[in-house]
Amino acid sequence: RAGGKAVVIGGGLLGLEAANGLLRQGMEVAVVHVTGSLMNQQLDPPAAELLRASLERRGLRILLNRQTVAIEGEERVRSVHFEGGEIVDADLVVMAAGVRPNVELAKAAGLHCERAIVVDDTLQTYDPRVYAVGECVQHRRATFGLVAPIWDQARVAAAHLAGAGHRRYVQQATATKLKVTGVDLYSAGDIVGGEGSEDLVLRDRRGGIYKRLVVAGNRLTGAVLYGDVADGPWYFDLIQKRTDISSIRDQLLFGRAHSDDVAAQAA
Image (spheres, rainbow, N blue to C red):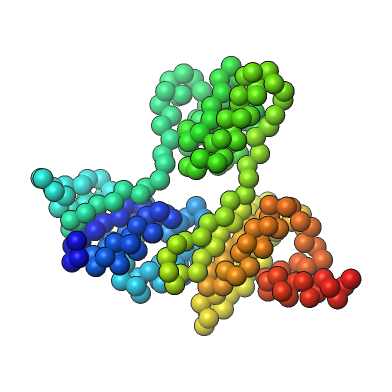
């Protein structure tokens, strides 16, 4: 209700969209996140900090590095308690903390687990007699919370189990766009990078623009955009198609129009 106090537990994509909706309904809203930056699966720290500042200007209260230990109340929720003794009053609590794989059964069965059940490209666990797919698996360091990759995993596992040929599961690049009016944010591909990769970065603090492109072997592998997301779909297309960007590398940060002009002149 308008004037009430809401706490959203989880500072990921769905949590922030829910928080914005409650704020627009006239509630006082606090977003609680366990790590030190919002949307940490999709954003790097500079972009996450720009997002935090923008959301706080809108009126959201952002509480980072908070571990929730209790939600208290009788017939209705009254407060949320955190490690260290901090308490936040609440009339409504929204849980948007994402997927946390339950690996207890797998561990008890002797399967190797990290954040989830570790599988190879054929969806086999460390015991080749056991396959695993879905939200409980970890493939090449990644875990999954969307249905599309799980369907792909199921097809690969089913093909092996049915003896229908040797297939391998290949992760597909995904793109994220926050659905909050006035917040221009886009993330695609592998934003972590790593050995053999290079970051191309553009910052315009006055304009509130931040771009970071991850390049590896003359291929664009990841993109984080804040403030100017017009070229997001183009970057995503380059990532998906594994396009050789060597001829436009120096212009890549300035967008498609500039890169196309350079490519045309070179031709």
